[in-house]
Length: 376
Image 1 (cartoon, rainbow, N blue to C red):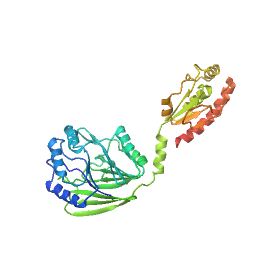
Image 2: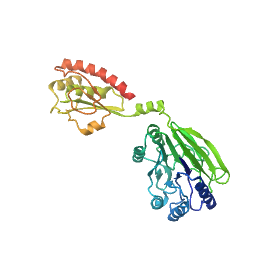
Image 3: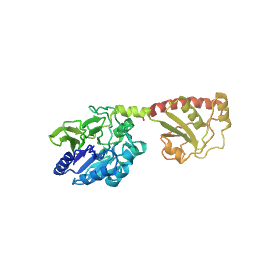
Image 4: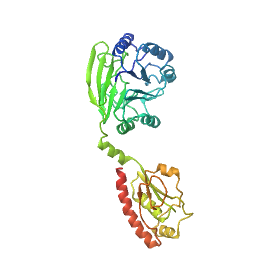
């Protein structure tokens, strides 16, 4: 599969008309499977820029996948983007590749932002056995020689982690600062296009990328419109997730533990109390029962009073509790609940003294549980 990657055409007073006409002729000679346009179609987000761009770029014979840039989001310009170039985010499958187009713009701002909802949408469109190519305008990483090296997405770190974990064979195509560049970030290849046709070009000539994909690698060529092409390199796809970032992610993620018994008896109450007493701040436990008692038992009340602790009242297990839990422990073997990760075979205490002994046993189990949860 071969694609052409263009960006920052800037229809309006920045446009070099002869450059875009030459580029269209060259692209049609290449006959790519897809042309990817990573934003800044116009300059001020006004209607005639999008209309002129659409009429001119319609001469490209290949299908065009376009996403908006910060200039397109000026002056409510995204409505004209949608009029001529379709939705601001989209998914296109070509051969064994999935192109996931993202809107990284903010209204009337040069800054870029993807956001939680759109990031979830990206991950929902990733396919494990395909090459996954995320298309957006803004920088995922700082690009040298641009004059504004830190002009990256506001939520770049969250995007980097999401792509590292979920974007198998991941490639990011972007534009924005008119400088072509490529780099590998963890297991994601980030490829930027320069400006196709703006006079504000920060290279020897206006340019675009020609990118070829096979099952294992991506081959990148930088093509200057008037002075020829330069082979940038060939890069391997689908490397493993780096072990270090996997560990850091696990250490910083939150964990909710659910202790279950039929009656939500003292065993689960002690487990809940001990866990929340000794666990780190990113972990929390609750307890519940499938048929909970109406109130705490006499022994539970005695235990709480003498130990100076507060035990929560019995609660009934709900579907939401199960869905929210990261780890589920049952203290009754006969609990008919899906998704139980572990069973603790502990007897219900019949006296305050037995409750004290149980507390020590549970404390040991909880400490071992926390150690396992840290890297799970």
